[in-house]
Image 1: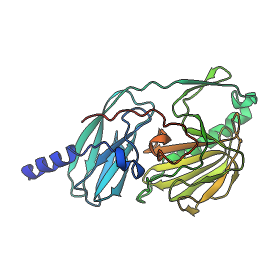
Image 2: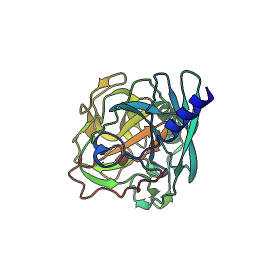
Image 3: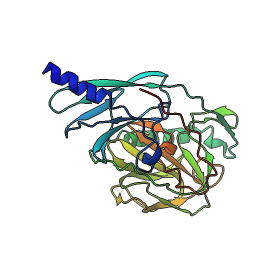
Image 4: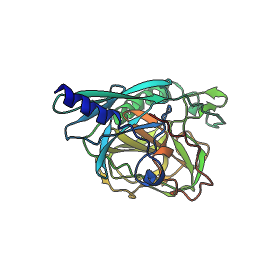
Length: 294
């Protein structure tokens, strides 16, 4: 039994891999930085195996002849080692780790004409608090559906704001930018990036008209500032289905789609989930972190 365990441990520990090149069309891109993604190949995967990253359960999905686990690395994570825990149905529990590197994010300064969107009044604050509970519920959802991670772009257009920027509204610092802003004409159709179930929809104080989609096993996407919502909670959608239209509702400076991705409750940079050739409006791909060596 000890010999078997050591053998299995070597197989799993050697399984931290770095996907790039021709695989990018079908898998997220690994980036071991705050706001990035850690990938773990499971060549000896058995049904019933659960994988955790930093004590949160993460998504596991089939890829070719193997299985892959995907962990989101939150923006608040400090540089250092973080642990994958593989818990098999037969009782074996094995661990391996990855090293998260430091990444500096730039600043963005925006002027908001509606000052209540920067400094809400008491009534606004009560509304925001209630909406925060809905947002928390949506991002904590974990369904057992095998996720489809071969995303498409929800809309194409100029990238007006990238993920992770330290944001200043009317020179007041607020939380870092939690998604990718894609500028497009108001009314442009917005598509589901992958098969999903609609978790929640509604008009939110800061986000305007917004849709949450559940893609399975903790992978959640949201689409904000819509002019129109075309789906309702409980609906099932296929990749490419229209879920709404680009707008400028909520806290905005112009029409655009705010697109965000959660993985194991961590906001991650959507650019690592999207195909490089899927948005003709992009003059060049945003800078990527070079693959690390394990």
